Each structure stands twice: as C-alpha cells, then as structure tokens.
Length: 211
Image 1 (spheres, helix red, strand yellow):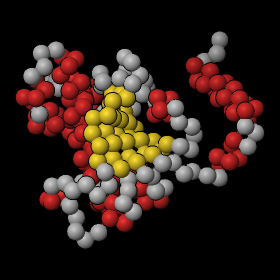
Image 2 (spheres, rainbow, N blue to C red):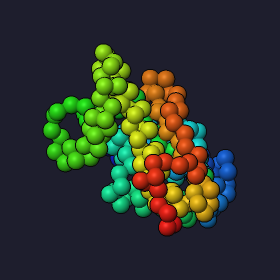
Image 3 (cartoon, helix red, strand yellow):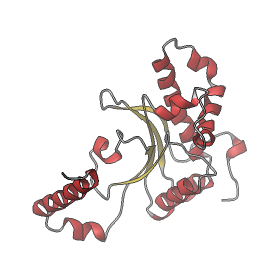
Image 4 (cartoon, rainbow, N blue to C red):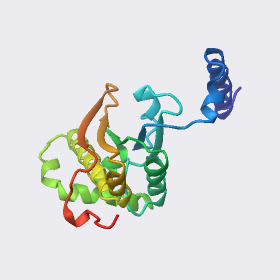
C-alpha cells in the first residue's frame, strides 16, 4: 500500500513528465525567469489554492499564505515577501484574497481559547469590535461570519496601503494596484470587495512624507 506522501511524489513525477511532453523547454525556461505580475496574499486553507482558482501557471503569481489572509505589520515574513515582490519583482498588483466560511474568522468571533493562535486571531477580533453593529445586524451565523470575512479583507488591503513599502512604490513606480477579493467555496467564484489604485490617499496620519 502506498503511503500518502509517496503518492505525492508519484504525482509529482507524472506532472513533470506531462509538462515536458507538452512543452520540452518548460522547466529550462522557468528556471531562468520569474516575472509575475501578481502578489497573492491568501488564506492557508487547503481549499483555496491561488493558481488553481485563477488558472495561472508557474511563474505567473507570487504567493504568500497565512491564517485568514492577514497583513500584520509586525509579521516579518509577510513584510519580506511584500518587499521582495514589490521592490525586486516589480509586481503590478497585490491581491488579498479571503474566502467565505473562513475558520479563522469564525474562531475570532468566539471565545474559545486556541493557544498561540489567539495572538494571531486577536487582529481579527479588533476588526469585529470596530464593526460589531454592522456584523451583528445579520441574524444568521454564517452571514455574520461572511460579512466579517469581507470586512477583514478590506482592512488588510488598508494595512497594505499603510506600509512604507507600498507607499514608496506608489511614489517611485506608480504601482502596485491593490485588490480585495473573496472566494466562494460553494461556487468557486471570486468576488471583488474593494480596490485601491496606486497613489490613493489614505488618512494623513498613516502617510509618510520622507520616502
């Protein structure tokens, strides 16, 4: 009987063979070039693979994923990915993509302790607190969760705009464009919930003048 991890390795060999059959220069070309137009900041949920749901190929989309697609200003992993994508890869678009039915968002609305995960989810609790009346106006739990999913995506896009990385790129390169999307697990469709063009002015408190 084949172990699950062994199946992954077999599938990898089959995939690589198929790529070469269809395009003999595929891996040679890919190994020397990485020019994605998009940085995708998505949820770690295994049901939301960036390339599959957007139909993109290897080399077309640069990906960072974490629980509930967060942009946290103390997260050096996220900031390193963002700077590399914006400054060195020169991506034209940064997409924050959440998904309806997100377990992280749902957990943040409750009081069950999840250990160290509490520290991460507290960022979403803050969003819930700021928009509690709007979210709680929905009587159905699923609708409340999905509303907070949308609000969370919008807040993370704003968090991107607050970074010096994005603001400096807006001034020097007039990019990237910021997008807030939500993916539907039940229908496979992505919904746009917010957009922010390069150079968009935000609250002056968060705008840097010495970049």
